[in-house]
Length: 447
Image (cartoon, rainbow, N blue to C red; front, side):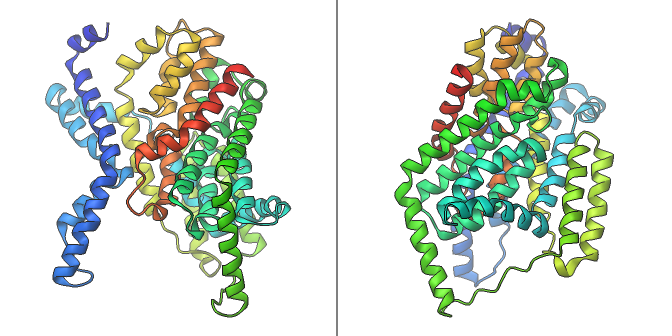
């Protein structure tokens, strides 16, 4: 069947080939980034610090994971134009739904502001203080409560808040490479399943909730409590495995605190925003989340936020939109490519029994956005209740295996990029996410 479809419309095969090349590029991105660093060092050694090189910038751009799918949209559009004409290419782009990329840009920019982050830090801090306020307590509370909070504030907002808190409270202490990857893998998997307590927070659930007739009570009864159990089990497993690494961080944090107390490293207190500014930010974030499916509304709210941010600048951090825009570019490119993969994904899923669907969806999610997987599965008319459960469970379970597996992942990677100077290596991320993914699959299968 797939061969016949490819022969009937060769552009399908071309689009999928370009999509596979884009995926390969994501695996090679850290190598481009490392090459750009080496070339920059040679250029600066030859011409002095700060010397500019076009080759360095090109290599660095090719090494930006967030830019990969957007880069590969260009040859895709050229292929469509050559095969079908420019009007067809323009019409195709006009039909692509860019709501999710736009929403992630807005919510990422809002969630990373000082007022929102300080509020989240205060909430997590109350729980962390029950464990003594150690790096381990922050690590455990953030990786447990943060992803579950995503069911209310949406997964992208939870991802950026958790990533920034983990960076500030744990990764700033320079943990081992193994712990850094374990933390990233746990974060991606936990956020992917943590949004399943409601029907509106996780992109793969949101794409099918109306079509399947699922509401929040249904999600809680069939997915939510199992996801919470899986998150707890995964965190406890990694806490046991990395016990010594986390204890070493506690000793390092105590040493730094002692140095500050002795005056060796004076530490200026973090400026806090007035309560009324925090309230305005939280209200704006809530309104943006509520308007997640209406771009004119949430973009308008974002413009209001930018004006408010400028008016209250003394109580704000500078607004850095580079990371949100890069993540939006990544997701927009992924949406464009994903729109042309229906020809093979839907027939493949339609042939599988529920158990095969569970594992098949988890595997496919590693190479395509899990929201695209569930959306394409919802188009299969023969799916019964068991098949629907299996495909959604598999899609959310596999959402941490790669950066492209779940829409919020690029936001988390961008927030933690400085802790991975040579880029996040896909194989290391997949290895770190494998055990939590297996635990989630087991919980969805047997609980």
